[in-house]
Image (tube, rainbow, N blue to C red; front, side, top):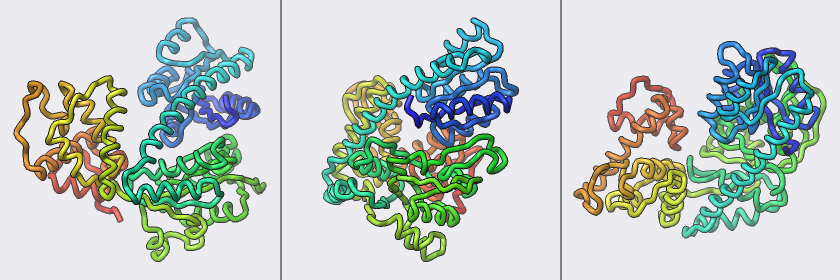
Length: 458
């Protein structure tokens, strides 16, 4: 396993939890701890851990129930090693059937556990290699654009990639800013280092500092072990700060100092640590207006904005739909095992004329849903027409009516999947809370438990 692999250790006993964390940190692993399955699931939602080492005997939710939750939510992306002081063959067999990678009995030689972790790490690396290959394939599918403005974007990417200049990528939600950032990294001299994305929108002001700068044990309540921050973790690579416009002023000051001095200090420490990372940022906000409004520091804005690259929205590069639609169609055919023989005329008209307020992310979600709901190998709006005889077409509705019907059905489905929470749904489909709330009002969509925070959208 690579030195920088992160491990989440879960145990309700503080002494066992901290002892295991110290053992793993001494081997070069980055470790975070949790005292319950509930806390561990919260940590997994906030950041990616390829490996979880969890005790079985825990109150409320035991390790076996926790294992089930991990495998239901994260499928094959997280490996789990079970730890117990009361080992039996039956328990070991049960956990392996549920998808655990390995099993360790407390009191046995620690080398047994380290060996299991090493083997799990090899599997993680194999998966990461495949994911990187797939990610590069997706990135490359966007590089060869038919649009003049996007061609200019990729020329800028080539020009700035092999420098250390701080790059700010701007554009609407869902246009592919992270893909552009990833391409900058893959073309740079830092390509062998980590590309570490952090979405600033996911962290409140009181957490983003510890996430970026790390902390020492005892720095604050709940800091039970030392934590390496993202800036330090990105050493030798690229730190990508998405939605940097959401970052609070105090954190802006700390990051500005780090960029100027190339040093950081973990929370709870007085020791300065030298760091070597390249910063690429992205935002869907107009940061100059944010500066004028006093919500963004002017000196920080100019520091992160050595080079600005603006990614145009999908509605301004419609010629790329000729490549993007087949690309996503092929991807979801493979993932679902379905074969799409044709796209019906109404759907084709809609896909090529829709405005895509959620941009590429929305297009991707739409194609995925249509493929999942498709019948008889025909792609239809909202998956309608199930049971229709092959080759027999429905009468074509007016474009505006078809669009409205699809939008309403699409939004109802998305809201249902996210338990009618407007903010969660908006994030998933690439709209702002205000945009989604306005659509709900426009179409008269009734939800059992509406999150009306959309009314307060700036």
